[in-house]
Image (tube, rainbow, N blue to C red; front, side, top):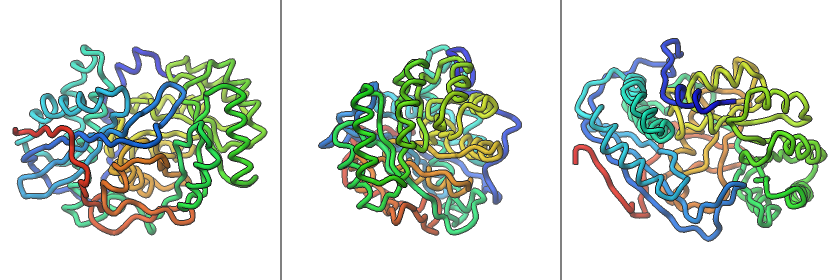
Length: 403
């Protein structure tokens, strides 16, 4: 779906024809300061995927403050590898923040576009479009939170959402060790839809999926996520085999950078809808994915690329093309809440991803953390993201600009 060249070109490019995500007028602001906190929380059960494990849970939190005293929070993707969190904090405090602090801005979109274009060539030259895009996304989330707080509106309503701000959710991150018990625990917490990690070998994957289906019943929504584990040939065989269990979708069955023809061919042969998007970067990449037609479920990650500025227009394009928008997130609490606001603003029948693995940087980190009731999350009417930072866990690093 993406070659190395198109990834480098698309990760930080901007689209002058992009629809504005904002609905009401945004008051101009000047950023007075930017603080980046790095957190690491130990966990009792590592998060396992087909390509590796997370022995602890990291988070990079961005706090922006304007000259009138208003502030907002954002989160930066930083799961892999271990040095990722600290490096992204360095990028923000040492490279990106000096380009935006102390200057007047008409709104978050202007900051997003400035940072994306200002550092596009540097990101390509350094071979690091991903880290730059992730850092810009975290800053963007914080600025939209701040803008909605200033407007005294919840972010999802500020972005043009209607209704009650209630979104369906699913429990993700269910790993290969005793998945039936993990799914049962998630059901007790209020979940009604679930996603199993696969890619650990045919026998184990089938046993785990069978155990989950037996535990949850024939009508439960169960998706599977291979995390790019299979070749196209393996994916065809695996999907045909697991189709008996009626998965809602198969996520990233093959590598994201496989040729578009591999994805389209796999989708045409698959009895199960294909999903992906967490590893797509840039509006052009999402537009190509939508036009190619291989993905029935498309999953941008607000902390990985785009923030609110990039992801909401993409979500609306996804829905306009008749696909399902399900925001991806496997991180800390701010990203979960931001994803929920995006889904509530965009609408559609998509599901909010909520990692069910232990993570103190969710429930013990932001207040209030969304509660699951009968498979849904209802957002508050509080301004912005509607959260405060509990900070019961001390950061391992703090970077600020100005220092």
